[in-house]
Structure formats: structure tokens, C-alpha cells
Length: 140
Image (cartoon, rainbow, N blue to C red):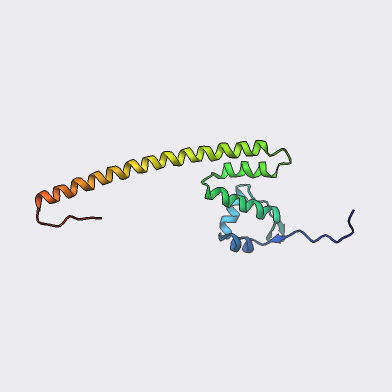
């Protein structure tokens, strides 16, 4: 057993977290209402722990990946679980795989739409040249 003094746990105000993560206090309160953060109260002020900061960081990472708040909450709870990490990693891979497939499907749809737009533009230019053969073609 060590006799070295332990440093007090790191604590953060909502303003500090908002500044660090470039969020509004309202967004942080939203994550709190969604069950992703659980600050303590000191009077009327919210006080966030290092664990809250880590959950906020994981939440921001999940949002960048396009995960829903429910998916983020599930993964955060697994992350904090004392159990083996294999189920968490398998679930994480499942969630990422589903998002990859969704994005690939949307990308394919967008590529089809872009090809259609290109064909419509080509047709419009052809019609313009037919009506005004001496005019230079209009390019976007």
C-alpha cells in the first residue's frame, strides 16, 4: 500500500467541456438528458468527472462516425463494463459494418444521380447547340 498522497479526481465545469469539445452548453445538457453524461451537482452548478469527459469524447467520436445516440450509448456502456472487451469489439464491428454498408449504398445512389445529371446537362447543351449552332457551349 502506497503512502503517497492521491491527487483529487479531475473535475470540469460545463463551460470547460464546451470549450474543449467546441460544443454549446446546451449540447452537453442534451447528452446528459440522453443518459450519456451524469454530472454531480454542487448547488446549482454541474460538475463533470473525468469519466464524463471520456464519455463526451466517445460520444463526439461516435457522432463523427454517424452513429445514433442509442448506438453510442450502447457502446459507451460496454466500454465502461468490467467484462471482457470481445463482445464490445464484436458489437462495434457490427455497428461500423452496418454504417459502412449504408454509406456505400448512399454513395452508389449519389453516383447514379450524378451520372443522370451529367446526361441531362449533355442533352441540354446538345439542344442549345441545335437551336444556336454559332454559340459557344455552356459549361458548368
